[in-house]
Amino acid sequence: MKRRDFLQKGAMALAASTALSHELFAGKKKNEIVGVQLYSVRTDMQKDPLGTLKKVAEMGYRNVEHANYVNRKFYGFSATEFKKVLDDLGLKMPSGHTVMGKQHWDEAKGEFTDLWKQTVEDAAICGQKYVISPWLDVSLRKDLDSLKRFMDVFNKSGELCQKSGMKFGYHNHDFEFSLKLSSVKVYDIILQNTDPKLVVQQLDIGNMYGGGGRAVELLKQYPGRFESMHVKDEIAVAGANEKYESTILGTGIIGVKEVLDLGRKIGGTTHFIVEQESYQGKAPIDTIKEDIQILNKWGYK
Figure 1 (cartoon, rainbow, N blue to C red):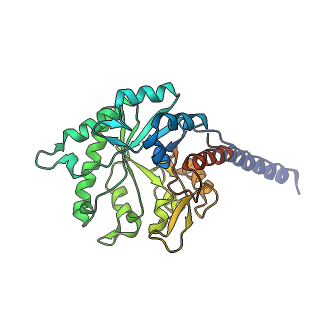
Figure 2: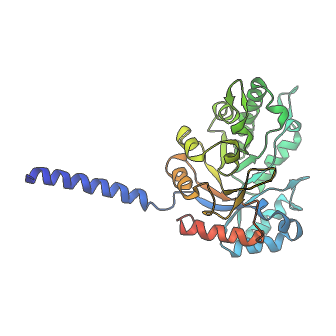
Figure 3: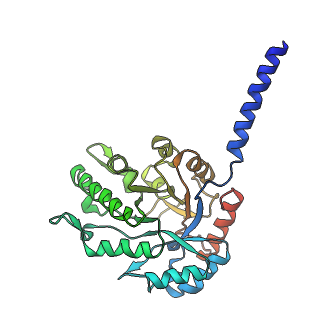
C-alpha cells in the first residue's frame, strides 16, 4: 500500500471511529430526564401518597408523572399543596395525565370550558412542562372528519398551554394502530393533523405493540416527533383479554434499549417515563425499583 493510500485510509478510519465513539458514548442530552408514571403504583398512591412518593424518591427517581387529577386535586392535594409535597421530597412533576374530552370544549362558543382551563392552570402551578391526554373517546374516532375536527382542538389546547409555558400532549394506547378511518391509521391521522410545536406525542412503546405498532418503525417514520416516551416492556399473556402485559424492562419482547437509544438519537426524546402496569406477582413498588436500576445501567439517569 502506498503511503498516500495508507494515510487516507487511516484518516478515514479515525474519523469513523471518532464518530462512532461520540455516538456510543454520548452523554445525557440537555433537558433529558428519567421519571415514573405514578399509575405504576396506583394502589400504593391511593392508600398512602406521601409514603409512596418518599419511597419513589429514595429509589432514585427525581421526576414523577401524575395519573390522578380529580376536582382540582392531585391525589387529594390542591395544586399548591402537591407542589410543596414534591418540593419537600426533591421531586419534580414535568408531566401529568388528564383525559381531554368533549366536556372540555364548547363547540358552540369555540372555546375551552372552565374545566379544561382549570386543568391547565393547576398543571402550571405544579411546574408541569406537558399536559398530556392519555385517551381518545370512541365518539371522537368514529370517522375521519370527526377526528380531524378534534385534532384542531388538540392544536388549540397546545396554544392554551403555550400561554403558561407548557405544551399539550397525547399518549397512545393500541387502537391508534389497529383502527383505520378512510384507510388511514388513527395514529397517522393524529400526527399528520397536529402541530409539533403545540402538540407533543408521548409514545407508549408497550401499548402500541398489541395494536400492531412497532416503536422502531414509528421513530424512523416520524423523526423528531416524540419528546416524551413511556418506557415499557411487554410479555405475551395466554388466555387473557389482552394479548400482552407489561413486565420488568429488558425481560420482554419490545427490545427496549434499542428503542430508547433510537429515541435519543432521532426521535427528539428527552423525557423517559417508566410505566409498569402488570407485575407477575411482584409488589408494584419493587418493580419500578428494578426498572430504574436497569435504566441506569443502560445510561439513562
